[in-house]
Length: 414
Image (cartoon, rainbow, N blue to C red; front, side):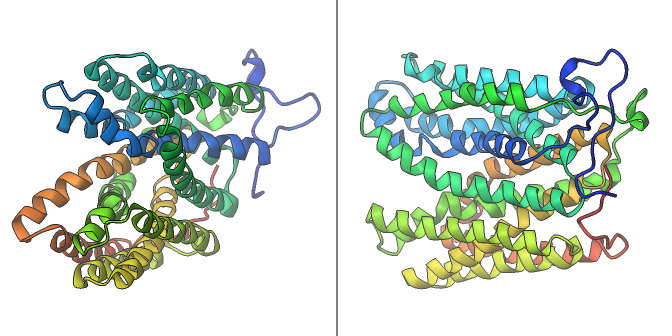
């Protein structure tokens, strides 16, 4: 089978954007990949862009009851909504149309994302952020599903790894942009959400709804729940591990006496680059099985978190953060490819939605779980140590569970 197989011709009467050009078969290329990767970054934009202006928002709404709780929720609400709604977006993707849902979600994202530019109530802003999360769940599900539709085999695995790489690097860019734009006022960064409307134009022209294969016509194929259960449960935990130092590293550094925002930002950037490097490493190892990769990835994360716990040295903490970032950068594309690579066209949207929901639900739960564990074990660093030990155990358990399903990730099923 070709590494990037041409899509089957559509049935008679199909919408024009599903049909290949006369005498040719439609094949995705760099433009489609760039657009889908750009769309995948919008959930990252929603998660980090306004972080630098949260103190300004707190001051602006100082008279609002519960402002100290509500303002942080403005940042985290989209992740919760992605976790809750992505599985339903997956159902829509499989039943209706990948492209149509993607374009509607992109335009709605631009509308709801820029709403805080003119909203004067913190409650209304929070409601707009909830709607942003709903759009992000649809966008992530559509973009990831289309990557699975357009490419197969080693190329699909490599592009899913590239999705993690680009998203990780974009987080650093968006944090910097949020800080720069925030200097002009806390509302200014919200202008950047309008980029989704600009992206929707080339998406409408260059992205197409894949033709449904003949084997996928008629009754929908049921999801292989037993096949998806373990990857999604492991992904829920993986989301907690992935997000732990993204959220808590600045607090750890402050606890050991590093309070300069420039230093904290530099160390966070180094960890972000390590995560990107992990995604690159995954691209080279994508032919290995999850049984081989998961213990390495969870093991690196475990060692890194334990180093962060065991020291007050900023240098050693940085080394621990780098190891954790390297492990999680490899981990996310492994989990995604493990979950969706054996699904067929008719199942891929639902499977991708379930995986996306599990990941973002883990990210939302991460700070809550660490706070609860920290209250019981003596603080944040001790909670990270508990998470590190759990990470090592999960890596071993995943390998044991996969003894009977030791298949490489780069399967070539369409």
